[in-house]
Length: 398
Ligand SMILES: Cc1cc2nc3c(=O)[nH]c(=O)nc-3n(C[C@H](O)[C@H](O)[C@H](O)COP(=O)(O)OP(=O)(O)OC[C@H]3O[C@@H](n4cnc5c(N)ncnc54)[C@H](O)[C@@H]3O)c2cc1C
Picture 1 (cartoon, helix red, strand yellow):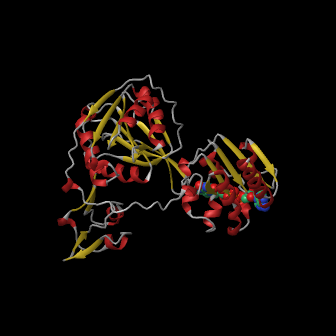
Picture 2 (cartoon, helix red, strand yellow):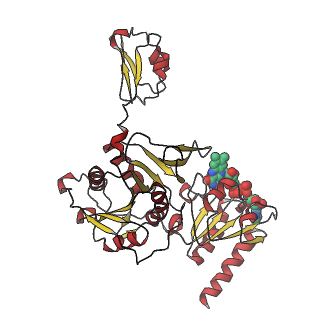
Picture 3 (cartoon, protein in one colour):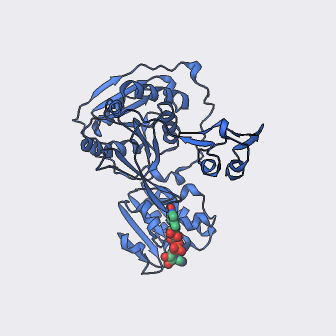
């Protein structure tokens, strides 16, 4: 899409300049000039009294050209040869979508020494695995991974490409989408197949979670999206499955890489690694004040758990945002989730209700959290949590 000025019609009246919310138009030499700050919002198109500014849509790719694009791909994200759990969750969901679309499911493994990952990808449902291997992929590098994935897409033409909405996935996805000129829906929480068109229906929260938007990508391929970790369950691996392995030589040269990895600093400790945690102890406004979170941290430490928080607590500045669980925070699916002084608002439940076991501690027996809890304790968090910590500590030492 583009915004174009028809020079002959422009009188330099300045109506567009005053209406542009981004200050992207300047009047230069009695003519409007659209600068790089333009976001294509189109406010200037309706503001111009002389119809001198027009919005031009891209011409859609030919539909028959789209038919050349086949198969649903999942990018397997890894660090030090360890795949992120979201990659297998996407293979599980991808299998269902691929079956519904009657297409193959493929995994894309880019890395160094990735034999185990290939086996795991096939066991988790992939019919094919595209592999690009080399020391240049030993750590995530935007340039190297973008080049490798773009090359694979251009060569093998998948219909759909799914990536985890992790820090790396959200760096890589848009870069590849731009290179291959297609659409990408970020941070999806639901995937489906649109009954009318057969396209992937990508659903994601928008405007702070106030609406759920379902987005289609009708004219461009591959249809791309990043998907939040822990929304889908990881499939049980079946090691008797077999798959086709397609090894593709690396085209990245050292000179192509613009960044050098100097050091890796793990700023996010185990306490905020909520998405991979098996146990989470979460606190809400019922904790009373920020200092009382110590009680949550002590219980978490004994259990080897991560620390979560409700949005009320994050908004109040008691805990930083990476700890927030819920619709506008992280989606988690641990084995055990402790909800302490959390009322159980729908927006909080949206991020944790798929936990295997939920334990709620709340002084109000009518709190909605008890409706989803497997175990409930009615009482004051400041009495119950230290007692639990003491008891778990005793059992650990026994
Ligand atoms: C668009 C939108 C998006 C949102 N996204 C999120 C999100 O991602 N995550 C999220 O969490 N919320 C989200 N919210 C906010 C959500 O609606 C609730 O306001 C929030 O979850 C409430 O947090 P809370 O349970 O900590 O606090 P409260 O609702 O105030 O509940 C506190 C609970 O603590 C109990 N309590 C009080 N004192 C004690 C005590 N001494 N011992 C034991 N229990 C005690 C009370 O009985 C009460 O049940 C969102 C809201 C909107 C509109």
